[in-house]
Image (cartoon, rainbow, N blue to C red):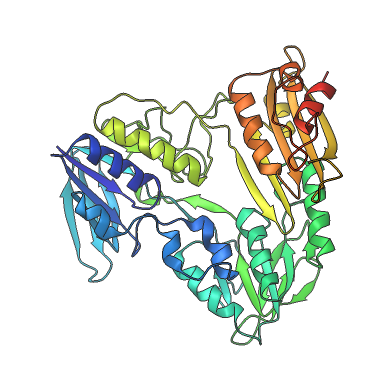
Length: 444
């Protein structure tokens, strides 16, 4: 049997490695558009910020190591068409521009996502960059060393945009952030949490422009100003961080079912609407444990887990990926925030009879150094008291408490059970009644 995998970053290589362990005799071929495989883009803001300098630390496994296991990899080869009827693909060698065809018995599409370039006039002027690839990271890392670049404008206040702020401040840059919506991370956190994150940014002298649509970049040879509908702001460098879109345009004539944004619709086994074609990662949908419809959740954790499942199913194991809680987290300067399950906005859209509470307490005892404020928002079913969602924000241990709440949601625990849960206690780590207990007891 011959398996072809299109894309060799997260889900693709996870599937390839798992399938190879299951079937030592099958032919496994990976085509990757970029020059490397198994790359973790989540580390890019910290690489740019100089928190580490060895770019190879973001590469989980080299091409050579995969090839030693019998996986045939061609980097800098782009698949430009899929013929699902005849089980053929068309491949372009990006070094020679030559094209050729290859055939498969089973195909996995793991092409990931690329940065969205908004309709901004003069966006291709010098000193305007995205932060998605390793090459992007290398360029921006060097730009940060340029002392003539003093003012950085970040367009987009999602995960990458906000993480890039820390990188810029580490290099003593003045930072302005432009967000189209009325608050940051609007699709991830509810307002109680984003209010605290915005306060943190302002306290560190980050200029935050909300409800701000960037329409143009001005400059002679390189960017000098960011122009919105309301103002002009000086900038020596611009980072575009306005979200991602699935890399699926080359599939438009295949008949594969997709979401409105182009994400490939798959079932719990990673099967698409076309027989013998699978997909996972940032180019595909995923089952959300708390939502009825396929959901787009472009997270590295989901990509790697679902990729492993697809690898098993390429070997006919019939394994299902149970689903995601869209658990995610972020460090915004000195604050950390995590979310899992449904937000309040999502619960409203699903017409769930819910209640929500927001509790602020301390992370540990006051007599051991390190006490900080910590807040939890809990969303739960008003009738059954089953926990549906949680968001945690604070300077210390917020994300690890989010992980505990993810387990609680997965296990369908009630607020009463959370209130009496036997969590660890020691003065450096918590109070005798941890905030997790407190929020459960407050949620009536």
